[in-house]
Image 1 (cartoon, rainbow, N blue to C red):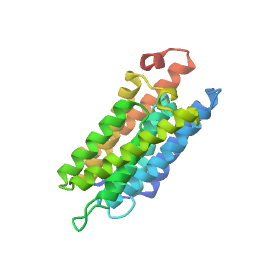
Image 2: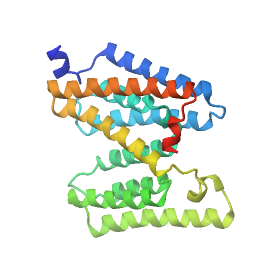
Image 3: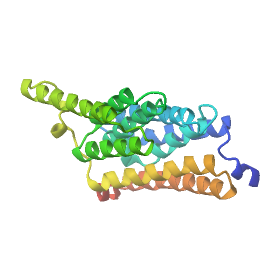
Length: 254
């Protein structure tokens, strides 16, 4: 048992299959009780894409030697555990943009200025931002990352500003012509502060579940992973039970 906990991040086909099956089972009640499944399907697709992206990011970022089923299956289970998150497509879209931007920035090196990477990463942040605060925060974090990596030069900064300008010009044209109104920021359904907080808490727990066993393999990391997984599974059962008996637990986060 001690060896298992200490090496819980090692690839295991049985564990991967179990986590994937559990994740799929957690989505079934949501599909059964949802009358309009458009946003449910959208969120599910984004979760699957983010599962693949986070697996690739950890591989390309050299956190794992190969694309790790441990990383992907952990993210899949955690994002599937809380039924309320099954329609938070805005949050999953934000995470997708974050992962794509990070994957782009991994291509930076010290042999050339990161103008292309800065432009593309900034453009991704601008495209996936569903609220202005996410747009501003994403761009500031991107600039901070470039400064920390000593890649922020005048050319890199101007490339990032050009990406922001492209986004502004595009939205001005769309507003002026009245095209694609569904993608206008003001027309996108918004999550409440409690909903963002709930998603943020689950995402933070997921990140710790992945990072701790990978970076600090120990019995403590394994115990944390196992306990958090059990808590998520219990939370799923309790949430579905409350919904089944018409207890308005979801109203807390609306």
